[in-house]
Amino acid sequence: MILGTGIDLIDIRRIQDSLDRFGQRFINRVFCPSEIAFCAARPDPAAAFARHYAVKEAACKALGTGMRQGVAWRGIELRREPGRKPYLCFHGGAQARLEALMPAGYEPVLHVSISDEPPYATSIVIIECRSKDVFP
Image (cartoon, rainbow, N blue to C red):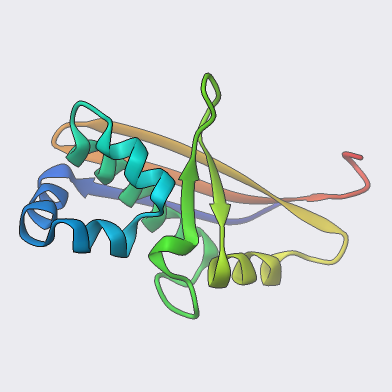
């Protein structure tokens, strides 16, 4: 069962402007340490940060809260394992909101898709719940 969907589109130049204007203060406010390390190592860090930003925006829309009700930038983390597709981890208020959405006997399954076509980056997040009894 689908509990929430979110989509976001961001202009990479907007993120570049924030990086130029606010630098590390912007980065530390919005991104988790693993995301910072990943994006900083990319050939175009602004595009990488924009993709991550789009994921966070799409995720908070899927949660149905936006960046309020305890959901914060760093509470939504995009992770990657080498050779595997990216996945989402929620922390703090985002995790609490996700748990509140889950019906009894169900567990969350998070789907994320990310793309870019400069100067834009986009992401879609889907929150699904599956019965714990169906997939032991």
